[in-house]
Image 1 (cartoon, rainbow, N blue to C red):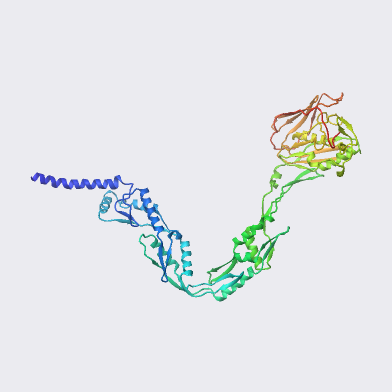
Image 2: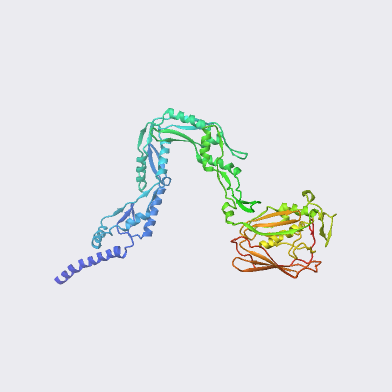
Length: 584
């Protein structure tokens, strides 16, 4: 029997130790990712909850706190505060993180002792909350003005029938905002809330009656007359009416020493009024262009001019000064849109110089010479920017007597005729077209369209020539370089010359003829070459025409454009019909 008593005396404590150790291991070692036993937060038991479950529990706690209004007492009157209006929230993550460290920071044996105490006591984790203090202060200040029976008032300027009138200062009570914020913030974090009695303080106004009267006088000076802003160089005005100025009038107490009541015009309201008509005063930008000096034969960039727009940011300053003064001012302007072609873009096209030139000759003083020279005047001075296509007909328009063109011989139905047809007006201008086309050819620019005559004239290069009529045939080229092309024309009584100025990227073109085929050989700066061929069959063939010729031009200035496309071949029809202004 004694052996049984001794065995029991030994085994029972051992069983208890094992049982307790197993419980500790289950709670603190195996369950280390959960909150310890006996932990609460805001009265909510979060023991043995994992992180996500504990956060969920605190979210539910926050919802409960937010849904329940807080009762505040102001001079014996009860009002309710919606916690969400004050931006109330709790930091669930911080609460749970703090809870996870309870009884787990002092080592194995110390933690065991703390764990064992959970069977007899709880540890409460603090629940920090946040509020939007600025919003809460505004709410409390509004209560001072609307709930108190005898609120203090610092004085103000208000509008009545479009005029500024005074609200004079008076002594009274106001809620002590700083203390009220602290009391409300503390009570909001409790589940079982009690009404909060807000502390009051007596206030003597800092603003005097004279301060208010002075502010009223200043306000009526600001809104007493319309303000009219005019543009410097164009018609139109931006008007700020008395009603518009009154809407923009604001007043505030400036707490200097001493405090004073300041009136002004709200900058945002003034800018809003100005924006309604600001687009009427936008000045578009002016692109950079080029000027040609006849004496030096130099093509020089003319700077671009940025656009302008109303300087909305400066409007409040200008309007306030005008309102306090004469009532009128100039619309403030600032830099607007940038030009599509800036000065820097134009300069980057350089260096600019002569790219190609071609001259043809003719007898003096006939009507056709007048037509050639008139067309040269209409085309000369044209600028063709990169990527643009230039057309003689689009630029010069129809050749008419009203423009000064005369009747001269023209190819009509395959024969040279003069001068009863309307087609004869402007006859002879094909000589300009041929001269122009050869400037394109030797300038190495892209040939968009040209058409040789149906009859050959010995004054023109064989096949490498062009006829002209309206609306067709036409002569067109595309500026496939990275620089502008300036078209310069000049003439004497017996010659016409077309010169292209620009920068064609360093390309050089020569002409080769074999029978009725013309080949343009284009050499690029990298040493490579490309060729283009044109074939044409005249109705009449001169028996003396050479079989093969080669023509070259002087090298253009150094340039940086890319090589043109690969070889192209065109085959115009074997005959042509001409319309107004065509002919040899």
